[in-house]
Every structure is written in structure tokens, then in C-alpha cells.
Image 1 (cartoon, rainbow, N blue to C red):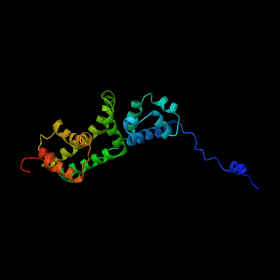
Image 2: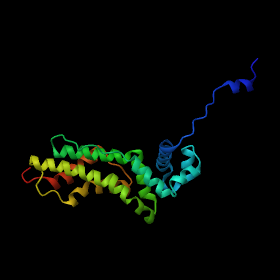
Image 3: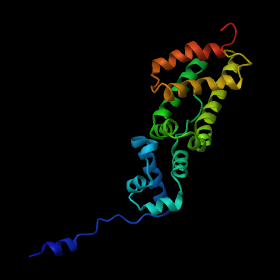
Image 4: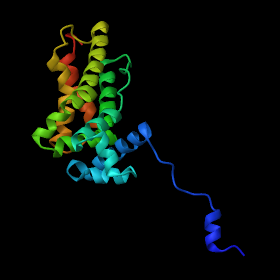
Length: 208
């Protein structure tokens, strides 16, 4: 008869192999994003991240000496790429589809994590994340807007001088205002209304 002790000894160990290097770092960054999207910036702790990544707190601190350092890297590694500029042959449709893509990025886990940082951290900490916002959100969306508007100029349905920096800030500013200040999200209908009533008239070529 096989005793319970001998049966247990005969079973293969179920312990997971010890993770190192990039595998462990990825697990820690993922755990930081999970914490941000569930308990927010104020609730995130290095101990909680270590527990979520199933590692020791020392392993986290060896790589990231502060919560700010960890969150900056987690956001930079996870913010979704916006892809290529949409091309449906119409500046109105291109802008609408681009806005939908921006909205979906804001609703993704990394987008929610970024918003929790913006909403909750103090002014001093917020400065650490300005480059993340600029390089990960504002600059990519502005470049896609430039491409969409440039194609519209070439087709003749966008006026030739519609390349002001202020013009390209309208959509990101409105979308981030609604999210950060008003605490609500854009529906497809509201995005279409913004495009039709605000953005297209701003870019429209005379006679169109």
C-alpha cells in the first residue's frame, strides 16, 4: 500500500521555475499596470506589485528604486501603438475613425492606468509622467492627424493653411478634457458630433 507521504513524494513538483531577467521584469511591469487599473496610483505599493508578480519586494526595488520609476517604465512598455493613419478617402471619416482609435486606447488597461496617474498623483509626481504622455499619446496622435489633414489638403477638401499646431491640439485636448475633468467617455455618436460640428468646420476648404 502506498502511503500518502510516499504518494506525495512520487508526484512531480508543481513549483514554477524561478524567473529571471526580462521574464521577471515583464511580470513586475504587468503587475504594476494591474495595480494601477484596479487600486489606482494612491493604492499602488511596491509590496502589492511584488505580490502580484509573485516575487520578493527586493527584486522590485533592485530594478526600480521608487514607485514613480516603476510606473513610468510600466506605462512606456504598455501604451498601445495607434497604427497607421486611417484612409477612407474622406477627411471626415478618417478623423472619425482616428478618434475612435484614440478613445479605445484611452479605455485600454494602460490607458486607464495612465489616467489614474493623472487624476491622483500630486503636481510634483505628475511632472515625471509628462514625457510619457507627450511621447506615448500626444505626439503619435498629432502625427496621424497631420497625415490625415495632409491628404485632405491634397484632395482639396481641407484648406491649405490648416496646419497650425493649435488645430492639431483640438481633438486630443477635447478628448482628454472629457476624460480627466468630466470623468466620462466618448460614445461613437458624440465623436461623430465633435467631428461634424467642431473639427471638420475647422479644417474645411472654402466651397466644401
